Length: 343
Image (cartoon, rainbow, N blue to C red):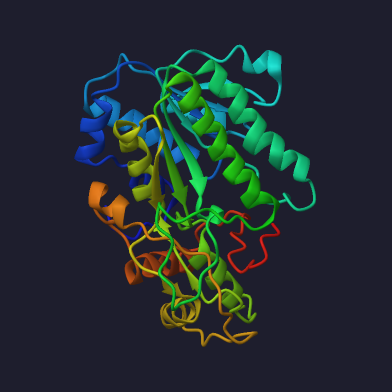
């Protein structure tokens, strides 16, 4: 299996391939694993990794249950073929929400980001209200929940990147509701003793989407790269999947917080130039470099789980190979250029 996939099947196999540490971690689960928001960008490959790890650990007694509205045609059927139990559910619908199956381990992947500045009520409902309601039901479970680096303040290149001890300073409606989501998990942990691990992620890359995909597609379209945000974090999604599944062991009351990203802070200009060499394109830039970026320091994560297997230039080479092979791209831009918090 080549390290640079060029087909959907090869990419999904690589994204969902469990490490030995993931197999060992899931072998310790004491009950079913519930994935809320499995229909999102990360959900399908993460669910498949969980099922493959459980199979490798000979834990066929543990079900992987994926919950989503399943708006993408065919996704539910694909997951069920991979032996993921699926439940169609709008988590904002109380009668339906109350029928969700019990589970001992719950992974929250739900969230509302793009459109938060124009429909803030949906951001608050999805990011704050729904987790609060669901935590009533799953108060006795171990919980891992995705959050975002957007809760941190923007920093200059001369400042240290925020760590887990940096005080949140959210900018804009989305980031504020993301912090509100974290507060709901902290409340449940304080009130019920629910063990929680919060993963502040930015930005995942799976070749069909991600910061380098956005930059490469801009170049391929003959457009200039915006340097308003001069630096970015990125992380291979397969690594993020693995960390999420292995983080149940870190869940605690009060919640454990962990930054989840790659090992480098990437210059947007340098990313464009590297991609340009792979693609045979000389990048153009539409602005001078800005002064502030949304970054985080994931040293603690790397100490626990090691560094991503694909990082830096190799990840960029994988993106270029995928695009040159005509690989499918999701129309889900990261909007990494946004520097005012309005998504």
